Image (cartoon, rainbow, N blue to C red; front, top):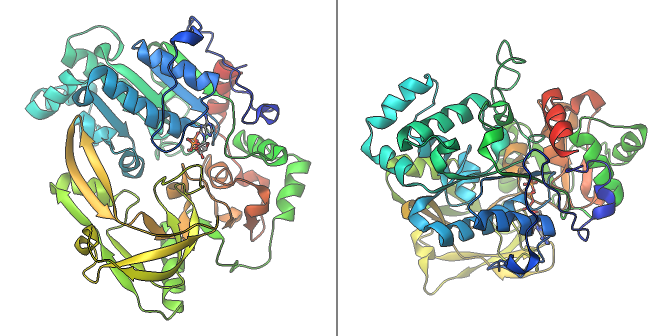
Length: 475
Ligand SMILES: Nc1ncnc2c1ncn2[C@@H]1O[C@H](COP(=O)(O)OP(=O)(O)OP(=O)(O)O)[C@@H](O)[C@H]1O
């Protein structure tokens, strides 16, 4: 069983069980050959499964990495990108994701912009002619040696097949993906492509990427990571594994009931997660203005062509950030994993410090650096950081902004990939597959959960096709 849904409980953060999809026989790596990559943030004890992936990458294999929320997929991808750049050269590695927010967090570009095929609604032949007519895109396709695609759950199967076809045709190479080393990561039981459930004959359509005709031959190795790091409470892990599969037993229901609160306005240290963005803006604006403090404005400093800056606009770093003393904020970059200053860490602005020098002047003419007291206890002066859109070895656009967003409320979509200590949500408003799982799996512990309103277990949804896929390949 590759992805151990029910008994990951016993394998929390210690058990390094390495398994490979039986479809692709894979020689177990010789331990001595496996280099343990060093992260720049903190030294990580990689699991055997994670090491196995590094080994396959070094051997130029194409890999699909999946696993529940919090199994370290993102962290692994970040290291893989560094490794691929060493192996192939920076120019030859393209890092992509279906959404701007994820692409920006990895310093890459969206999959659509990499491919140069617009919305990709036309048939594969039409898309091919479009690419052949565009020298810049054509060169990119010919030059790329490794293509990373994160958050694959949001990529449509039909699009995956079109890209695979383009790669073979453009590169005049009959191997899958025209010989590109493909590294794909994601969890199909989290957020699906936006089209899922919307098309008429959804059962026969290639909605998910794993339904693509080219999916199986695209990878030499498929790994279901089974060590959960984000949570350590066995009760919460069991609850989440059930919700992941669209199930909630009586025990789980009881646990959730204990987290229900009648109060619709929770304590401000709790992040309110909403399915819809309009609610997020409403709550954050209301809370910020309600503090009655002087508001300091930070206007992002962007460089690059408009087209690429548009992608930054869809990322996590806001164009216009308004802060004041007392504002609840969330960190949007990993600063120090060991010190718990990770993407998603929350805190409060305790004041501002006037900078004497530095690049703060580019985003705030008053040169005021916010001081944040994080909930983990650390207090620090926050400085601007950069978000890049990188295409090969070229930085196409850069945004300078503080690594902060307002944190009274945020959307479930934006929360994907984050770790949050305390959250409040209205589960009755959730819609679509995987949404409740994504929301609740941000938590480290059940103590951090509260929700309002009536909640019906039917809101917990996992797509039957995805369940079937995981059952057949990873159990
Ligand atoms: N080998 C490891 N040792 C210790 N901690 C790890 C390891 N791998 C990942 N982590 C930690 O586990 C947490 C979750 O990792 P990460 O965000 O990469 O998971 P994920 O699978 O991408 O989750 P999600 O699907 O929710 O985005 C992070 O805090 C990360 O630092």
